[in-house]
Length: 136
Image (cartoon, rainbow, N blue to C red; front, side, top):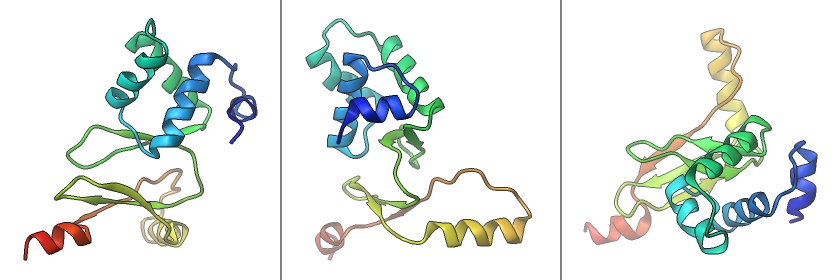
């Protein structure tokens, strides 16, 4: 993935810190600010939490990344992808994408509610196979 091009396509200035943030987000898939800060500090020791938040907010504003509100956890961030949902294991806290037809769900919700829906963040909670086997 060409991170410089991705930043430019989203009308953001290319900086070493932004390149590092994007690289870590892509590698992690989903990451909290705390985990991102701990990892980015290894490469950019002088970066402050305020600078990290400033960059995250700029990326959010330009739709380069998306915030995922996770039940009973701090928000996670991911590089914007086509519409999808997430799975959260309540046993081991595994968090992952699942490709399902989110558009159909959003369309149905819009029709039933008469809302003009602009965004969605879907997190389905349960127990992964591993945790199900451990509880037996």
